[in-house]
Length: 280
Ligand SMILES: Cc1cc2nc3c(=O)[nH]c(=O)nc-3n(C[C@H](O)[C@H](O)[C@H](O)COP(=O)(O)O)c2cc1C
Ligand code: SF4
Ligand code: SF4
Image (cartoon, rainbow, N blue to C red; front, side, top):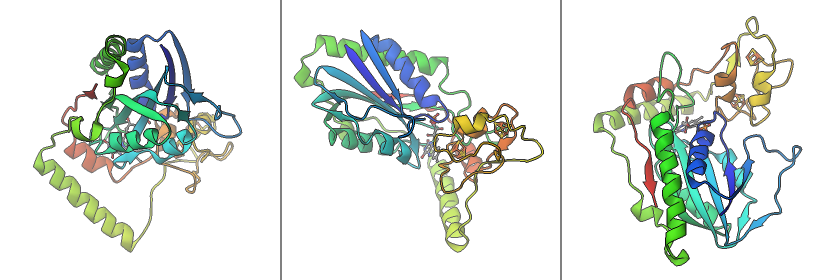
């Protein structure tokens, strides 16, 4: 089995989940394309077309109930020819909605055929000490489960005829149950937030206090969209920032912060433990 992976993972949870699945797959050969830091200047292989004998794996995070738009931009050039593909989405314990259907349509248009899919859990990008959301996920239990899924995919490819590999995500992917009170409370928050934004469109971005920032430059390296300039790390270029929180979680001094207005309602309403969901 020759595996090629495509990943976008600013805070690392989609990558961790993906590597657990890869461990279970145990491919003969693997090429990992990490598109988190891909840009034209750094160079990326855009000319490759995978064949029907290859196996592709896409791993991306959920942003606002959709695939993170930057991930789609970066994998848009990838092409297959009837190439079997594993689809993984990682979400922050709220919901993944129709993201796997969206990703399946996206890769199908590019020559891939989805043969396995999973909705996996990662610590929410907005989680912080005051408003924790899925802290530490994926944990050891999640990773063991993802590895087992990888093994099951390998068995399916070995034991079953190629014609029977395809999956129907739209009709067969298991859904999440959320208590009605949590859904209602979160809906009310979103309505109020949208009303406020329409009246006064002010968006928050991560920033560091100028006195506390040591200008170590770690956040410059971690930012997937070059929204932080070396030498003036305390500010964020709002035109480039996607609020992924890689800089916040990676700042070694803990001085880069982002108080998303969503953190409190997410923490209050999505404390229940979501388990990984699979379709094979
Ligand atoms: C802008 C943004 C929007 C998000 N929207 C959702 C969402 O709709 N549902 C959800 O459960 N998690 C949501 N999350 C949380 C991420 O999906 C989650 O933290 C994921 O583990 C991040 O992946 P990464 O570690 O690979 O960057 C969002 C995070 C960000 C930054
Ligand atoms: S990682 Fe933190 S301390 Fe280092 S430059 Fe960025 S904000 Fe400053
Ligand atoms: S500046 Fe914005 S895009 Fe860059 S790492 Fe921080 S949150 Fe992500």
